[in-house]
Each structure stands twice: as C-alpha cells, then as structure tokens.
Image (cartoon, rainbow, N blue to C red; front, side, top):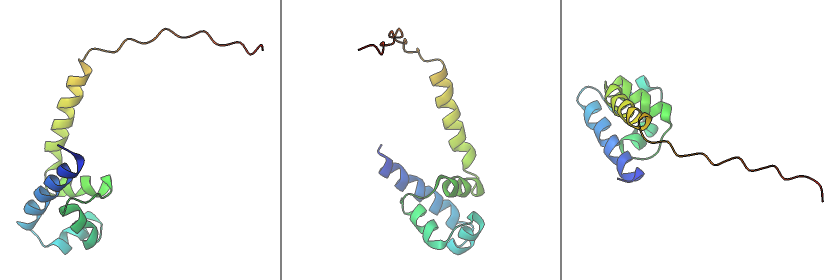
Length: 95
C-alpha cells in the first residue's frame, strides 16, 4: 500500500466515524483546525501529524494505531542487527 492509498483509507475511516456522531464543523473545532483542513484529512490529503493524531484520539481510534506501532516496534527489537563496519583509520592531513 502506498502512502496516498493509506491516507485515503485513513481519511475514509475518520470521515465515517466522525459522521456518526457530529457535523464536520463541530469536529473541526474540537480538533482545533478549520473545516478546510478537516475536509483535506477526510479526503486523504496530507495534514499535520498533530491534526491527524488529535482527530484519531477524539474519535477513539488512536489506541488501535498505537497498538499496531507497538507491535511493529517489538518485532524490530528482536530482528537481527546489521554488523557494523570496522572503523576506518583516519587519513592523515600530511600531503
């Protein structure tokens, strides 16, 4: 899934969840953004991370995304670690 597809999918989830309980203008005020910004979010356009996370939190969806992130972090913590290169000797400045 590409970023654009993910934003559209996430925006749709936010829009469907929000529309069950309140109008777009009311929700935009609660999020702390304008209606145009909320419309961009719901239509899959980029917005600030703060706006996105605030919207998810107000709709009770943030915990679901945190769980996925925590799961991914745990998986990466147990993944093999790439070997580091031996440090190269510094080049002298003598020419």
